[in-house]
Image 1 (cartoon, each protein chain N blue to C red):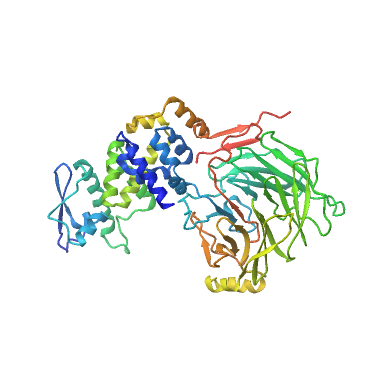
Image 2: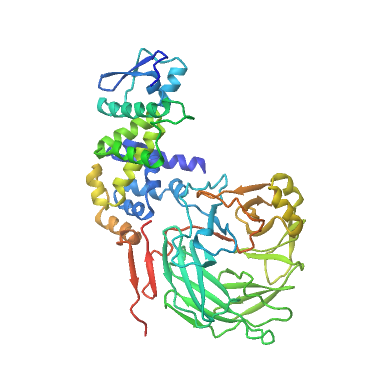
Amino acid sequence: MERQRNRFLVAGESSGTIPSIQSYLGDDLCMEIFSRLPLKALHRQKCVCKSWNRLISSEEFQKRVVMPLGVFYPYQPNTFRPESYRYVSLADENHGDGGIRHICLSFVPRSPMEMVDSCNGLVVVLWMDSFEGAFAVEYFVCNPLTKRWVALPKPQRWNLQDALKLVYDPAVSPEFQIVHLLLPDSWETAAVKVEIFSSVAGNWVESAHPCSPVPDGRVLPRHEPNFVDGIVYLLNLPSFIVSFNYRDGGCHLIKLPEVRHYSFLRPARDCMYYVSYDNTQIRIWTVEDTSAREWTLKYTISTATFQHQVTMPICDRFWDDLYLCNFQPFDIIPERGVILLKSHCKVFSCSYRNPRLVELRSTGECVGSTFHGVWFSETVFTSKVCPKALSKIPSWARYAYAGEE
Amino acid sequence: MSESTEKKMVRLRSSDGEVFEVEESVAKVAKTLQDMLEEDCADAVIPITCVRAPILTKVIDYCKDQVMISSSSSTTNNPNERTEQERKAWGQKFMEGVDSSTLCELLVASNFLNIEGLLNLGVDKMVSMIQGKYPQEIRDMFNVVNDFTPEEEEEIRNQNAWAFERDPYYKKRSSSK
């Protein structure tokens, strides 16, 4: 990696036959200047000349400006304000934190709001207000990096317990979809109806194929649906995973390796991860072929070791006794071999091969420090940031904003 | 305003041969010079080979100001101490009227002499100059030759079309069917 980067720099220097501002200032100073430009201005400057384009597009520079991955979390629980969300970068020695500027959700137009989902640089937030007993609901899709947002048309039906999954991959298409899983009318019928919003069509359409097989227990739509390659995965507690192809309605059940009260699911392209935990242990299970259903217990991490690695304020220790699990895992990133944990107002990453906690710090001014003895229970989102996301305001937008960064 | 300590002077020579005599404390604002002075490897006249006299004058102005701010003790009320806002305003004023080529030289000088504050000011100034401009304006400003063919430029422009849209704008949807 290091060698490659050097080669790029040498090539960049030798090819500039005309003494340009870049050769005068040097790549390093240029990158410093470019990295402070607002994204829009930056992307415009790619057109100036070949060497600028090369520099701005270079891997080294991209690492400096676009942070590959980070975590959104509400640092003031239960306030539901755009400002109460913080973003921390997932810096590591290979990727760096990209020196990204402060990312926040404070540009979101409505408050109170709640972050509902995020995917590859896009974020869905929900604004909800009650007026004379009736709920007013509005969904916004936002790009926190460019501060653009659009208001979605209203879904046909809506319930607080519904789940929403944003499907967006800028590498595949600039369009996004939202899969809306509706709470069943009663647990007996137990089929989860599905409404899909497509940014191409600009409207919600109810899928002809509901998600139906529920042998026991119940599907919890609200329990973070997961999505990979056109298939939605839901935990069907206590003992199954439902895999549901929302395009053709194909439904399968996958038996879980063990039943624990606290768990989450992370399907990846090649492998399914299932993480279960309690107050002493985190277990990471994988299954490579979901039809084979043979789970392997890959890693076991004892949370007792964490206690010695981080010193918590005394008031927090008091709450440990009351709360089941002090270090609560919420995501796993197989590409990096890390598991992400939250503990009170802090977010940690931890390699599962060599369990050591690394605190993730906000690039912004502060991470919540004065906590009133509350653990944050709201969902935490891991997301990439992407300048391309929502680069055009679609025509269906009820209203929209493309902010000056 | 303390004059108790005797002031050691340092002489700096610009690339075009002009010699500047400054107090040691002023020269030490530049980390590169500070290292040289502390290691005692500085000659009677320190040659600053890549910086022209008018630029060096400006750099020295900056250093003098830094010394003035930090001279009186930092704990007691310092009349010269600035709030964040004043510092910003001062920086803006310092960079006022600096054209693009001077700015480039200033950046190189502060990078070479390792003066972080000045480098920051310069980069910020540069950013403000580039920010609202379109590629052609940038080329004119910095004498950059456009080495793209029109087709290549068009392609890159299309790839980054969103960056050329006017903003900010607020859009109301025409009522749906």
